[in-house]
Length: 136
Image (cartoon, rainbow, N blue to C red; front, side, top):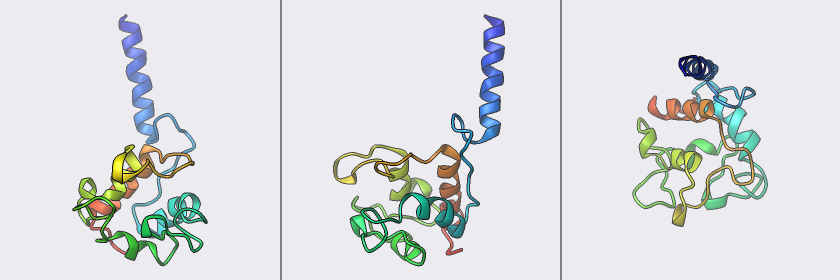
């Protein structure tokens, strides 16, 4: 029993150090809008039928050059919660959409039909928002 607990603690420590839990291929972008844009939005969000290439589901384009204006301080489907509230990741609809199956009027977990973001990617977005969501 003691040996199993020791192994479990060691495995949990390795997972925590890797930063991405069960997904060893996941790498976190720098917590800047430009890095998040390049590594997450451009690859998983800003394409036809979602939030790019002339299509802006929910009125949100995540194409380069559009994302900041569409996210920071902009209203969301959810009443009283902005898409990104600078300095407040927990009060940002973007974090809700990336971390929970919101349901109801908030819709599905994003990205729809794609691989969900790993914890390190979500943490980078949360850090960017906590830092005031600068246009960097």
